[in-house]
Length: 246
Picture 1: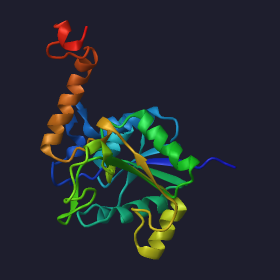
Picture 2 (picture 1 turned 90 degrees about the vertical axis):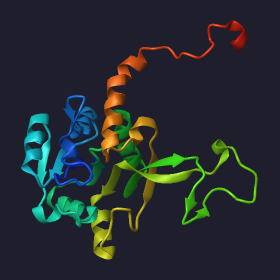
Picture 3 (picture 1 turned 120 degrees about the vertical axis):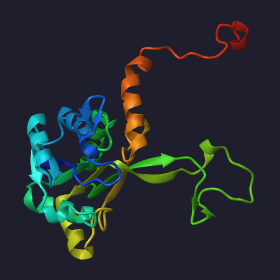
C-alpha cells in the first residue's frame, strides 16, 4: 500500500482583528508565524508545507523560509468566511491525501507534538483528528455543573472527570472525507461523519497567541527558557536540613 501524501498547511490571514498583523509580529526578534514554520520543516512526515494566505506578503515569507505558498482567493479572506470554505478550496486545488492544519498562533508546538499527531492519524486511520486539552477543573455549562455535584463534598481536582477542550494548535483531515462531509452537510471542520480521533497536547504546546498579553507571555517564556533550564530547582528553607529530614 502506498503512503499517503501529507500536506501541512499554515493559515495566515493578514486582516487579524484582535492584534493587527499578529502573524508577522516579532517575538524575540522572529515573526510569530516563523516558529511553527521552522518546526514543520524539522519533522520528516510532510511531503509539502504551505502557507495559506490572501496576502502576497506571506508569499515572500514562504519563499524566504523555504516553504510553498498557496494564494487564497480574496473572497475567502473576510471575517465571515469559514474554515470549512478555506480548506475545501485548498483541497480542491492542491493534490494530496491528508491535510494537517498547523496554526501559527501556537509557537511552542514541538517536533514531537507534530510527528506524534501525524503518526496517530495515519496509524489509526482517522478521517479527522483534533488536538485537545484535558483539564481537571470544576466546570459549568450555562450555569449547571458539568463534572461535580453541588450537594456533595469537594472532590480533589486530580480526581475529577476531565473536561476536554479543543486546542487550536493542530487539526487533520483526509481529503476525501472532508469533501464528502462538505457535500453532505456543508461543514467538515469538526469531522462530520467519519472516524474522528482526539490527540491530547500538554504544557507549553497549549499556549495560543490571540491577545496582546499573549505576546508578552510568549516573549517572557522564550527569553527565560534558557535561564530556567540551566538552574536547579530551589526551595525555601532547603539549607536547613531539619526541615527536609536530612
